[in-house]
Image (cartoon, rainbow, N blue to C red; front, side):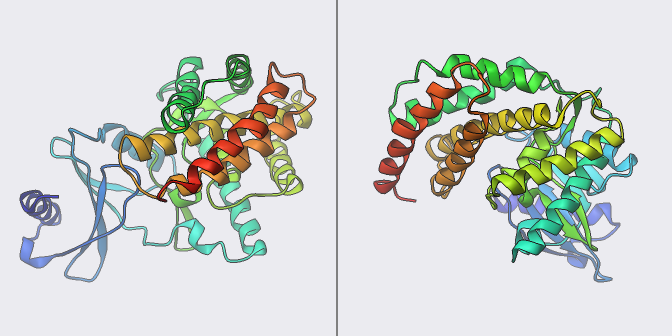
Length: 341
């Protein structure tokens, strides 16, 4: 970040508070996987705010501002936007601190408690925020996400051909997603995007929100990068979600738990495949380090989901599962042995 841009950012942030640059202190904070950068602004009275620097030629901040204002008005736990200079890519936000949810994953009991709290936050989002003004998470978008897997993971990184079982499985996963009720979807409801502030969970990084499947944010949480739940733990969380969604009307009482559980496993497979592709793209195209080391974790998520779908007669699922076991897993592990992680 150039000294000129830092100076412009500091001047703008000071002006929004009716102060001069000399009155404030700006310190850097950590960002992840994007061109956005965050700075903590300390005011003369000791209070703090966060300044987001999102260069407009690389990041479009309009969706973030629009969604933040709409969701904040709906009473949802998101940072308030105090000021926005979209032409320069500067935003002034609430400071939610530096503790994200994964920082509190210290033992099984704590993990269970906070995941239950996060499920309640998903319910609030789906009940309070209308999906009508959000982009559709339609078959085209679901397909583009899935296609990241053969393009970047198989072809570009592993040098593998796409198996014949891929295309019918791809279509089956899309149809399972489209069969669900449409709600507001954060789209990256991961523990790193949930900040713990004043004993409450707040959502950040929601600029890619869409109108999409009921189970998507649930799966983002349960099949995220920090935990791998047992089959029983996963089923227990899904059961609790299913019951609550039926009680408050998000899900029809005609949708049996077994049906919804199948949809969740299919959604989990879709997301794991997408993530495998994204992590390889971040490595190869964007020169981001550290993502290859996470591939085995999401490969395990994929295998868990495919195993749960065994026997349900999803097109090509059995053949694809066998290919993952015999070809994909050995190829990833062998490639990682020779890669600098």
